Image (tube, rainbow, N blue to C red):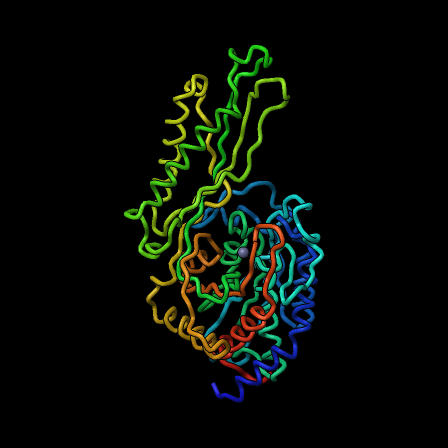
Length: 430
Ligand code: ZN
């Protein structure tokens, strides 16, 4: 690209950056946790329509996607699971098509008292914007949109079709991205600005969610010896799961992309409930677990091992021996994805286009990262033969208190994205 054009695009992002920051702040005000995404999606749809894009808004129907590879069983209802995809239609179609994807859902904020300021009242302090979802990943949704705005301000639009996606369900199943595939949205490459500090994610783990149901025998606590405590029974089972986790993380088990990563597969007990009354021996306990998987690790074998570990540990308990734990796999049933293993000319070209754009903006080479989490990239990469580039701004404490995103990083990612689009799709005069 000519230096002059690159400089023009870069300064167009600068000129619009106050608007972009304002947009991000507005978007972060929506508490778009699972089931509550509609208002944020309304806002996205209105912003996209105002820019003249054709906007497709639809409610996900599980029956449309349940048979597809990558589907994860749903928790709760889908009455309010709404996706938004805006389309830029090129007149010339001389370049490569592109999906700009981002998720609108955020994870629960946790106890409000642990936040320095309320999570849905975004504020800027010392160059960082604070708020639940500001980093993960509303900054990415803003960047996708304003990268295109900057090109437009220079008098250009992409010379290939571009699909701007705002999806739900990334944080629990990925079914939002899957529904976009099912609806027919395909492109030569996808870009997902998840907040990984301006590195390119070249490997991501798989993730399994499961729920363990334990029964107990209720008695008055005065005769606790004759009862069986379902809550306390959970403790040795959790310990056994962590032992399995250590086995999976042993050096000889590691996937090559994770050879240098200290502990790639994390097992987390994320929720626990049980019992009805302080002076009654609890008759029930339910706990929810998340565990990582290596790319290519056999999902079925992993599930079988989890069940065996839990049943083995349950045999040590007099009551559970005859009342086996119930194990349900729901939520994420995600496979790992390795962009680095995609040696197709399209993938190589997409990566080098991003490398060039990143170098032009930052002056640094593009770092590659194997992450210990999952993203929606797997749907494009594994099930649609579309290389998916995960590349976004620097954020901290995502899923924690005082989540924040660095605004200068958002600016650079927007500039890199604009250059990437210009190179990948090519440009045509408006
Ligand atoms: Zn995310």
